[in-house]
Length: 179
Image (cartoon, rainbow, N blue to C red; front, side, top):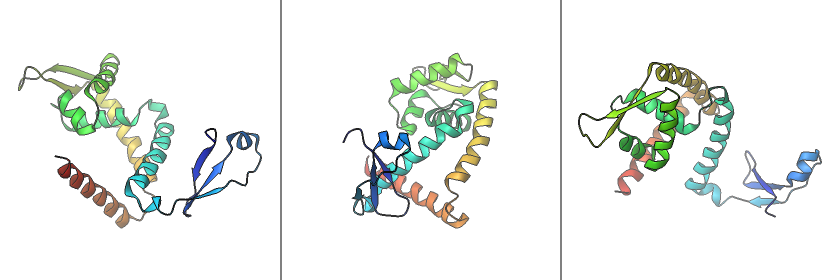
């Protein structure tokens, strides 16, 4: 059973179990359907499934730029917050500081970002984009606008705005609850 892959159906409350061996050979399978009606009423489950689907598409969509979702978030956040520190960035992106520092080191080696001691706090390290980092961010944002439009295309403009607002409301509500 571990070699089986689960695929979520679009509009049903069931998940069909598929055998990847048969699938690869082109054979049709009559997979057993799993009832997910209870899980589909669980926000965390549905958000996680959507996140996985979006991230899979993100990697394909941004392949030419070689960006991960974390890279994209870092570039845009540094662009919009020119004196953000590594610690502030780690906090807002919910990343462990050592993991973020590895990504930032790679970006610094590529010439995308600069790090410097903060004038506000000599213990902190501030981040900024280099000229090539600004260009890379512009390219990423241009691509990101199209990706976001595709991601939300199943919703009309009013639903898109409402969906994003509801997500922000939930994030804020849970941020306050976790303090």
